[in-house]
Image 1: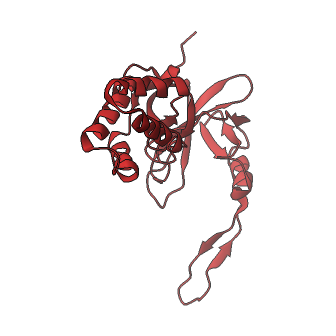
Image 2 (image 1 turned 45 degrees about the vertical axis):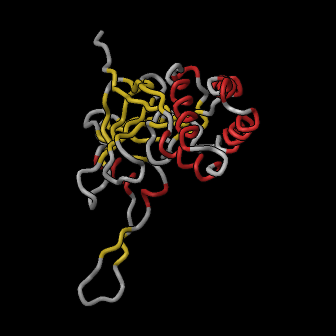
Image 3 (image 1 turned 180 degrees about the vertical axis):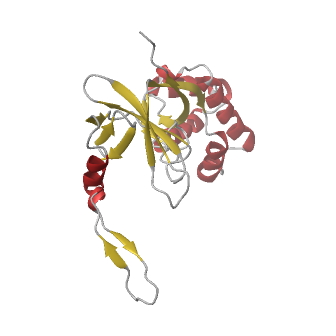
Length: 232
């Protein structure tokens, strides 16, 4: 994401600033083996088109980007905050067709993100347990361990957890690692009737599957809204 945009205050038009604005375009010509290179300078064109208007530069607020849909979807709608140093606004990024340029528009207000749930990767967790410890754990114990993780996770609030990474496919999903006291609490749910050696193997399994989006890490799902600016 470029760091700044040029805004026309009168037309509510925006241009992302950066070297891409001078990247040439190419046009195929009938009967010609090579495409025609067309020089571009989008920033110069933008300034010329709005020469009589009031222009200012907005800096993108780092870490403010949220998105409806996966990052890889070229048609996704995303939002981020930008500021001129006095006022902060929301910028909506979208496109109407795949072969059309991306559009940017200013929306007065602010982005509010909130966590809505803490989830266990139950199916993937059970499969990984069976793959790594299947010879040592009977299916009922696999189910009991997954249930114990779910029971404990149900007692947690998102603010109880430290996020360690964001899902690369969905910016509204992040992953949080269980800390040592959380793991002890989960194993304590099984301790009365599970052998000590099995508990040690489960503890080792937790440690070895707690990086990034590994199966032991909890999923924090979020939602966002655009809070409208209050009229004076």
